[in-house]
Image (cartoon, rainbow over all chains, first blue to last red; front, side, top):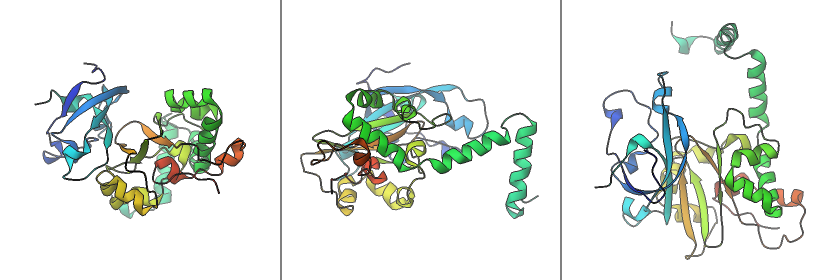
Length: 93
Length: 193
């Protein structure tokens, strides 16, 4: 589903850690937040599977920009860049 | 069997022997990896920064492919995550944090400093970077944008700071001597003298 730079995305408001043991690289503070794809960094075996020694399919990893002012009242820097895996990204609402 | 109660050295020896018997990792490879981990230090990254300051072609390589640039300077990158390099420029400053744990470009900076792993640094840098930098004595002009890079997954990031004023004509070795780990994380800026 390779996303082009500039694509508007939303981080899924998903909480697998509430269901059971999980290893997740998507920070809590970004769940359900909108961002913009900056670039594709590459494809990596899904760390969520590696952590449990399961077969780990390759997943695309994106550098996604967020606006800190939308994340914290009156806080944050000017820009925030975070690595997010493709299966955590969806269409913005 | 309660693993936590067992003798650590005996466990390590047993696991190492099993890995060797199964052909997964040889004792020589483990020794090599330990040696590489022990020798990696911020001096490696500092040499890369100094070269980037003096060699435009190397700077271009560093920004395009940090791993290749590190290998070109003799860093051992096999088995390490890809290295991304964030170049500061007039009006733009980068600072790296790992809010989830302590992801750090160990191959070029060595072990992460204790404060990089602290919950305070991790929680506050992403939320109030200007305030955290001020506590380091790093006061940036209001007009300078701060770009926080939360290192969460399969890349590792280092900052390429701007070359400090007053270093014109300095040889690479002297330039490298100015660059600290904290400069390559982005909480401080290198300065001459």
